Length: 275
Image 1 (cartoon, rainbow, N blue to C red):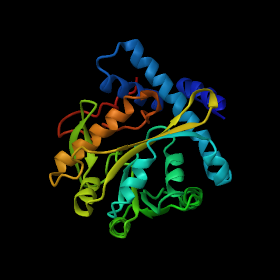
Image 2: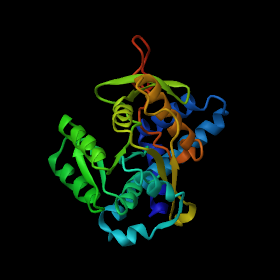
Image 3: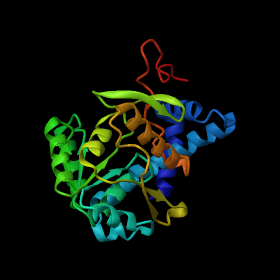
């Protein structure tokens, strides 16, 4: 499965100039202390990992759940989940687009009642497919609308877990705060949930092991001020946590996403000119 993904990544570099260009721009923006050759290699590796992730979805959404979870070779710090839930204030999970994030939620939903938002796709048939695949784990997914946000606050109040992927450009309210030294429009919702609920916060990711040897899950308690009542401080703290995690294994981050497309007024979009 991963071998086929690597082959598709090679074709993507040759044929899909858009993803290749975005990955190169992101590498250049975020790793200014690296050589040009190192940044080029990161972009190539990121496309390989991205393609592997696409092929993983077939297994994650259609294999029996027990078989999927059998791919998890080890879990780092699983006790932080139990300890945080035991506090009785619910649990907030930072789950960036890093590694096999769909597997991460599947593993977590087997252990705690888990809720998350999703952005409905343009095509209703695709939405049904996505929901069917993701909900097999037992997690509850809510559309990214006011009603869905209210459902997340209600879940936290009931002592349940809420997972958030906070590293995409929010369509509405957001603040410009640093991410890898670059201004990135970042959601304020996560900070509001953390501040209002008092829920403990953890960050996690599912590392894709080499040679198709499965996955290693990583969990860590967050102590940075992601619950600050200052939206700038909270959002910056979330980005710092994600950046520290990504730096452990840069190639497995979703570098094909235009994370820095929303700039301050007057600043050009760095992705505009295709190479």
